[in-house]
Image 1: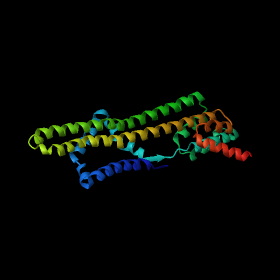
Image 2: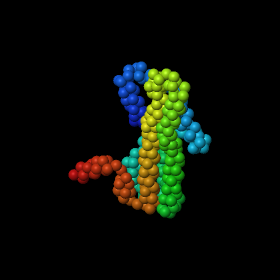
Image 3: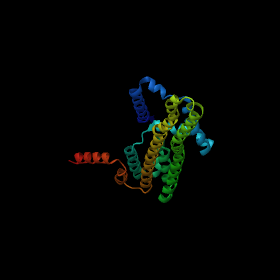
Image 4: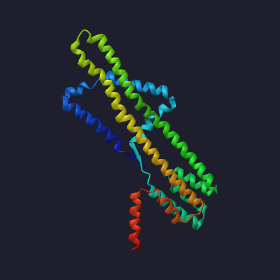
Length: 269
């Protein structure tokens, strides 16, 4: 079940709050209002969107919102639960045979686990099972990489468009205003530089961090799928539940493995 990943909005809020605090503490509310310039924002956002349209097909761009949404969601994938599931399935398979696992499929929500178990039930060779499941992992990784690349590219483009907006503002300032009114040079230059500020802020607080969060989620998902493959291979080979448990436990976090070992020592004592 997916939940809200609170760290993403909290992190963005903290970053924005620090910028606002720095501006207000130095220049008050008037200083804060001076940092708001709609044309500069439109130059950066419009420029980034335009370059994304050139860089990616429409079908992929339509999914950008859905892909970005994943950074704000947390799908709990507990490796310990997966280990427990395969230990249970291996015990039943050794008692009643692989065909008995069909009754367990209705209680399993993960489609990847279901596919692996069905392949094992159908008697597919272990090498073929691994090949098929790893092909699916490669497809998932490729799909996630393509989705994440939109945010990575937006993070690269935003500072560049901030600089472009600044250059436009400087040219207009020098050609139309500052030559006749030198006293306006400072304020007008500050406005021109705002596009660079917006580009850097969007890149380093929004686009690049979201890309990094998506990359971390992909890495964890692929890791879990590798655990599942080992569990399916163990089922197909008819390995004992204790062997399956010992093999899959190496994928658990070190801290949890140490805690489990301490519990086992206590039980043995």
